[in-house]
Every structure is written in C-alpha cells, then in structure tokens.
Image 1 (cartoon, helix red, strand yellow):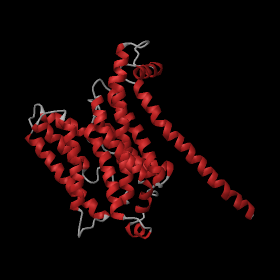
Image 2: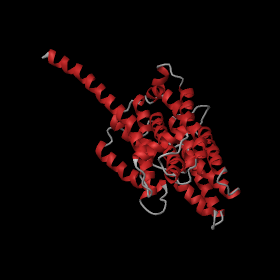
Image 3: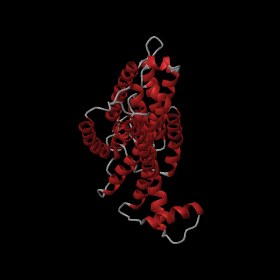
Image 4: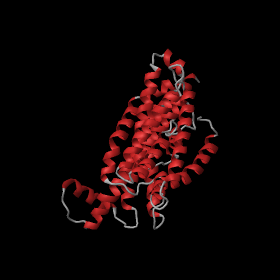
Length: 351
C-alpha cells in the first residue's frame, strides 16, 4: 500500500512537468500561428506561401515571384499592424497579471493606476491644441506616465503607500483625467477634433505605420523585460507586505520597480493603440486556468495569450465589414461575455 502511494507521488510531478512543458510549447507556437494567420486573412487574400516568400524577400532585398501589390499589403500594412498588435496585447496582458498579483485583486487591470485615462487626456490635448497625429502618441505616453506618478503620490500617506491606498489613488486620478477628457471633448471642434478624439479613445490599429512600431517598441519591450525579471519577486509580494519583509524583500523598492515596468509597458501600448479594454483583466485569468498562479509561468503566459487575443480581435476588426471597427469595441464585446464564462466555470476558486 505504501509502495503504491509513493509510486503515485513520483508519477504526479512527472505528469505535472509534462503538462507544463506541453503548455509552454503551445504558448510559444500559438502567437506565431495567429501572426502568420492574420497576414493571410483580409479582403485581399494572400496565401501562406506568398507571405513566407514576401517576408524572405523583404529580408534579402529581392523582389521576384510575388507581385508588387502583395508585397505592399504584407510588408507595409499587415506586418507592422500584426507586430504592433502582438506587442500591445503582450504588454497589456503582462501588466494586468503583474498588477493583479501585486495588488492581490482579481478585478485589477493594466489601467488601474490611471495610465489609460492619462494617456487618453494626453491624446485629446494634442488633438485639440495641435491637431497633429504625430504629437498624439507622444502626449499620450507622457500623460500616461504622469497619471501613474500622480496616483502614486495621491496614495502615499506618511511616506508609505499600501496596496489599498495605491488603488484608491489610481481611482481618484483616473476620475480626474476622465473628467478632463470630457471637458476637452466639450471644447473640441465638432467637425474635425471631436470625431478624432472619439475614435482614438475607442482604440484602433488602423493607422499603424512602421514608425509607430519603433516608437512604442522600446518602452513596451523594456517594461515586459523588467516584469519577466521581477516575476519571481511578484510571488513573494503577492503573499503580503509583512511576509515579504520577513523573507528579506525590500517591499517599497520592488513595488515601485514592478509598477514602473508595468506602467512603461502599458503606456507604450496605449499611446499607439488607444484605449483597449479587457485585455489586462481577462487574459491573466485565462493564464491562471492554464498554468496556475505562479508568476514564473503566469507572466509569460499572459504575454502569449494577450498577443494572440489582440491579433485575433484586430483581424475581426478589419475583416468583418467593409469599414474599420474600433478595436476597443471588439475586445469589449468578446471580453465581457468571456469573463462571465470564466466566472461561472471557475466559480471564483482561483481568486
């Protein structure tokens, strides 16, 4: 009897490791599947062979075997859009996972500290004052960072900031910036500026250019790299401040670093895509269903799933109708019902 129980105990870790290995392989390959799939799908259909040929010719500089129209569609339109969508989804998914673990709250998303509202205000301000599409991402990024800094100081009491005060500070700053966005929409010119503000706030990748990809690549990549490095500390911080101090963790410094990296990734994503909701909320929950609560696996899984989700939604945005559906609408229409499904399926057990 004892031999049977010990044998089963040996088999369980092996099965667990095999499952984790299989899930890891799937999460690595899945974004590639969605990425190459979206390059083929659209009103101008392109075969996978033409996609691979065009990408290879783009690397080598040759132009043989594929028409100029196909090369233009893939290299100048679909490839930058798909790459930016993957980066935006990965950044928002990882930031949502980091914030949910840090604040120990399943309803926290990547915009909890006001970065989305701050970026929205910055974009609206650039549209109203300068009416320039070139300054809009820059203003959105700067005001997104500013909103998080203000949230941090608003939640700081007696030179310390607890989890609950940070969330409250973020809620306050988010409300203030939302009111300022409404004020700018009221003051904006109804013929040109107001539609531009409204469309930006709904989120979209329609105007993606290669320059936009490079503009947001550095902050998103830096933020995600920082969260990957600190994901082990997230496991300790999620136990609570007292337990983390007992284990020798510098709680204020590690909290500030995680918030800074998550904010950097989120601000970089929002400044080029607009406000795209639900990704930072539902993607970490899907990741927990697959790999569990360990942030060693959860943060990379959230990156992979977030990239797949945004690519999938953006493909629907440009393929369902003759026009362009805003990305934020599609993510909300899919994310809301799917979150209800997660709630019913898990019954809150992983929360």
